Length: 217
Image 1 (cartoon, rainbow, N blue to C red):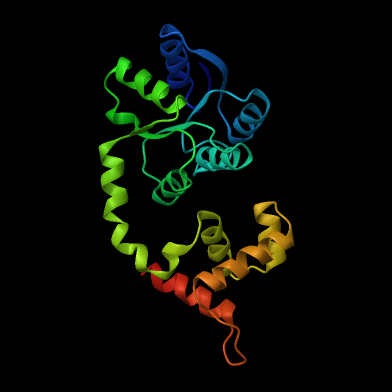
Image 2 (cartoon, rainbow, N blue to C red; image 1 turned 90 degrees about the vertical axis):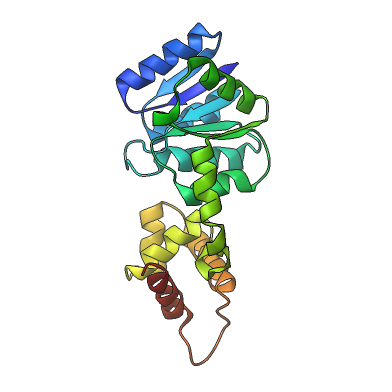
């Protein structure tokens, strides 16, 4: 089983490498940043990716975003998230496509080496490995599914957040390093999901931002 590991803390990364190798896994790459993870997943095509959520350079959700992008480019790529936090939107997206193995474990709740390695193997084989606390938090948000913003993807929420900051489509495209055409598609999807129909009286961009600000209260 070939593993690509992404963890920015050296001691933890080195410890995971040694642990997985001790149980017969081959470490195809052990990286510490989002760009390195993107390259490793594209070039090495591992059996499974074990990914921390927060990686350089952003130290926000870079690792999980890289893994999701890799799954879009290679549907079914097994991904096991190993994090200190539950990033609910991205966790829901990871589980939503229903293809390939997925897992989400919390670092401070992994107490047994064999249990962890078994989770890696299970995900690599196409199964799931979910920490009960992660499931609990995701279920707790189910009631929010009828809110308009719950229909948006994580990327669409990013676009909407930047819209709320007063950025134009051009500025948003530069910030997210995508084309203006891609941003135009995202904004069109946002308007449709928020049920903001074309109108001579209302500015859909303003209404979308108001929905975002109201959600944050």
